[in-house]
Image (cartoon, rainbow, N blue to C red):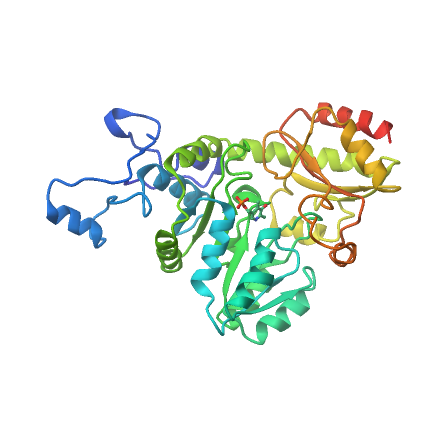
Length: 396
Ligand SMILES: *Cc1c(COP(=O)(O)O)cnc(C)c1O
């Protein structure tokens, strides 16, 4: 599909119009869901030209599909990237990206606080393939710099991190990676392109679990990677053969969601800030982790690097884990569930969700208190979320 380049720098306009400024089949203003596995040609010459990339077009939906292409275009424009390719899930995007570039004998440097699935790739799968993996203390920039300077093929970062919202100085780490010619990949899922633009800071690739804020409604899974065309082409090639393709139906749902991305993220930012301020003053709360709070260790860099602090926060309750259970079981509005980035508030303890497989000692090492609660604040009216928290905390 051919798209006119949008003449705007505004994210709200991009979210609505990127990839769909022209009319579609029979004048349709909305993207058709093209549930066709295969695409036909009137003559062999045209078919051949598309097959060798001389002409635009689609051949088979594992490789490319018109609905999926519009989703990719929208995220590409939002991330100000040269190219984008998509996946069936966020983890497919992450694993395909890592497997594209890392082969036996290569070295990768990353951090201890990556998303759970990502850290399993680093700890379990890549070492088995003979890739040398070094995971640094997440906020120890000097350690990361020293490890990168020893030489590596790829530096993989994620910021802010789950669940305590540690923020890394991307500019600083990217400049060191550039000294050694390493590819820098940033998982931008928590921030979204509305709050943070890693490519503008020099990253080579930015990726998302579209399942979270991009889709925004907890009803569709997907992944997307953006960056320079030369790199995206390699990742696309790995994905088209390994087959973790985004489906047209899902691409449509993600497109439907992403149109309100800016609106939603601005509201998530606002709600999370207000909830963090409320919690910080509460007598039953021990600590609050939100990069928008001056008390957060990453506040200074977050303020420089991000235009908003995001919709996820964490806090710990005083006392023992029974208090956490009482509080969570008393909530009436927020759902007790994993995941984040949805219009509805989701809440749960990392001890039983993202970090259930870690030992108490490992959680301690990662700075995750046993009484920690992670909250992915939705876009409801914040007064209602706070009064729900108030009544649940009063039962503790
Ligand atoms: C959820 C998540 C992923 C994985 O995405 P899926 O769509 O669940 O595969 C990766 N990174 C981060 C930061 C996430 O929150």
